[in-house]
Amino acid sequence: MKKTLFLRVFSGYAAIIVLLAAAVTVFAPPLMRKHHIEERAVGLEHMALLLESQVIPFITGSGEGDLAGLVASYGRKTGTRITVIDPAGVVLADSEKEARDMENHFYRPEIQASLQGERRMSIRPSSTLKTEMMYMSVPLEQDGKVVGALRLSLFMRDLEVLLAALRNDLLKIVGLVTLLALVIAFSLTRSISRPVREFIDASARVSAGDFDVSVSALRRGEFRDFARSFNTMTGKLKTMFLEIRLQNEEIQSILASIREGLCVLDRDSRIVLSNASFRRIVGMDAPEGRHFWEVVRSSALGEVVRRVRAAKAEAAEEAAIGERIFFCNVAYLVAGDTVVVTLHDVTERRALERIKKDFVVNVSHELKTPLTAIKGFVETMEPRTDGENRPYLEVIRRNTDRMIAIVEDLLILSQLEERGMRIEKSEVRVWTLAESMLRIFEKPAREKGLTIALDAAEDLPPIQADPLQIEGLLLNLVDNAVKYTDKGRVTVRLGTRDRMLAIEVEDTGIGIDPAHLPHIFERFYVVDKSRSKKLGGTGLGLSIVKHIVLAHQGAVSVRSRLGEGTTISVLLPIA
Image (tube, rainbow, N blue to C red; front, side, top):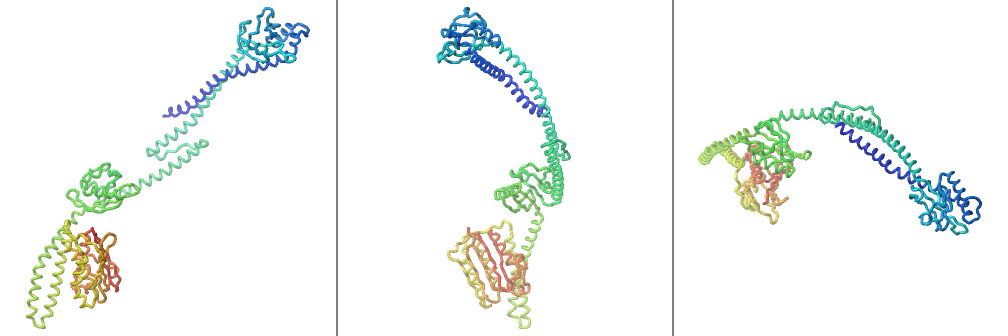
């Protein structure tokens, strides 16, 4: 890994350096050659302009001296070959050869250009000297008329020798610079790769859980700042992970101490966490990673989990797992997109409830017959009993009636509490039942000076319910209202609310202390015991009402002010 990191950086630097060196080596010599040729051409042109005024007189015949000698002298001094040509292309003088031995130059390209009044530079092989030459030809003009051409030339071999020397020097310089650049790149790469490698190694140790690692902060620049930040980060991570570890240990201890089974499911309904109680319930040592339905063989509970995840809500339900019965609470947690399932074993509790219910039912059945017999004997004896003993028979009859009422209410309550009890639903017109119920209580209400009324909304829809149970619900509510109201009125209101049938029984009676309100639906709970016994109350009426409402998936609530009256509200599904 270390070599790979170093080679990646160094090879990048090296590639750039070598490419630059190659570019200089390839493109510099042609540019140098072009520059020198242009420089020589400018020099030849300037020299030709200087000679022009001295050569023209010889062509026009006004010059004195030897033209060939003049040309030869200048040629030796400048190292340049000089040729003078007349308009017909005849060589008049040349610094290198005898003019009479030279052929006509009329068709030389540079000569033709000069005879037409142009300056021309060309590089071509010389047919006379058999070597490549650079030619600069200028027109010789007098009075606006071309009278000849002056051509200066250089041997290209001299320029090539110079360029070859320059190329060699350039290669040496480029090679040296390339070597120095590679050395610098090597050092720079090491200075970068070493701290990076150190950071990589330190990061690997941190990812493996070693938070005691640190990197040197002695470097300069960004690496020093990075090292300080890295060391600060590892210190904070160490503290954070220690806290998380302590929290996890605490959570594990809490989970281990919880008697209820608990597990956490991820978004795929796989178990990610469970406690010992859950593992004992499912009979599996390591359920983590498995689907919930693989571990808990309960289709009902699996459906609850699916429903809770879909609704992102909470639900509680009883379900059988194997031969045991569990109260299951399933809750969705938004933060982790998880579902928490808790299982509370209620097998023994349900068995005790069954025993208790069976006992109540059996005792009630057993008591009903002798109580009925006692009542019959009392009713038979009352006409034959004189005035002194009659009050005792009245006490016996009154308490017997109360005992019979309690037994009957217990039997009704036991039936309502029976799990899986089938409700015989049919179309029920509640206002019809309410009218019948009010007729039953008209006489007791009138005897107490009470006004009893029905306030029903128009077009009240019927509901699907058990008519006998709804009748029992109304009977208990109106009976309580009449019993505990000494003056004023009792009103039964029927209406709709949130697509539910609303039944309200309002009285202006004694009211209920707020401290008693949470308990009034409990069995045998009596607010005023002395008054209840006097009126023949059993303490089971509102408990029966609550069970009837729950059996119909409804809701019941109470509002009351002490000394002002009570209103009990029932909501039942319309459809």
